[in-house]
Image (tube, helix red, strand yellow):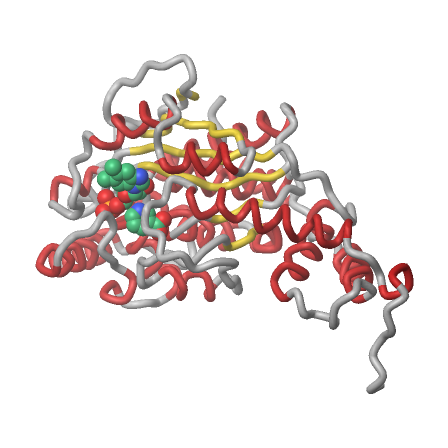
Length: 356
Ligand SMILES: Cc1cc2ncn([C@H]3O[C@H](COP(=O)(O)O)[C@@H](O)[C@H]3O)c2cc1C
Ligand SMILES: O=C(O)c1cccnc1
């Protein structure tokens, strides 16, 4: 089914604010546990946020899914990645066969992996693949728009309907993952337009490009922005002109998760570029986002702070796929377990503070 822009806006209007009352109730409980108040730092904050999101004090987050959106980028013909576009479909099969980094980390974190072909240039067939191809790779953004506005909306709709389907099958927590050679170029363009960072600040080494290729990548992104004039006040314009189809899909997953009152754990730079667009389209969705980690891409921390988010962990990751987001599930599990299992000052007979 094709979505119109109006349908998307109507869906977005249904997103509810996370419940401040539940956040406060969770914080009050946390303050009664046998530790100095606030001393568990982000673990306490995440537990309160989960209560606000779900409306339950200790929600069951055991059914969790990392959604890997895969798409190709026309801009790769400019030479912006250390690897060829052929790696995108090859890695899709690797995900489906369980051999990628994200698969291993997902098994360790008891998470399901769902891989979606939303815009891979090659024809893909595998019984485990979710085939939702909107286009055969984006157009080269230095020659025109990466995709049409309608295709951007279709990509978002794919992400939303997938989130709805997964929710119907029991998923209560989402992680964003992606695969698409060239997608740190599209992400840097989005981050630059949406945050006002210069392209030089927003562009990083992606798969590990050397200095001269990085300079070239910066000039390619600058050229694409000059040619297409994406409007920072119109996220669909930015997505269609300098985005990527897997990024469109992730915008949809984020908006869908927010509408479904589920936390959505963001991975690295590409996921955060999608989150900037989702937040611009649906500001309330920000309350449903958890920033998992700080990527080695230099613009990532700035993109996160533009969203008002702070990463839970810093492991020098620069692989994407959803790896950091899935690792963060362990941290979230720990936060919930502490809240449920720690003794209170009263139950353990521990004296409270005396300085008040
Ligand atoms: C084997 C391999 C596995 C990956 N898994 C994620 N990425 C990551 O690298 C790509 C982005 O970097 P760039 O913009 O420089 O192309 C994306 O596909 C991202 O998911 C991979 C890249 C490679 C080569
Ligand atoms: O931050 C990321 O997610 C990232 C960084 C480099 C390459 N691929 C992904």
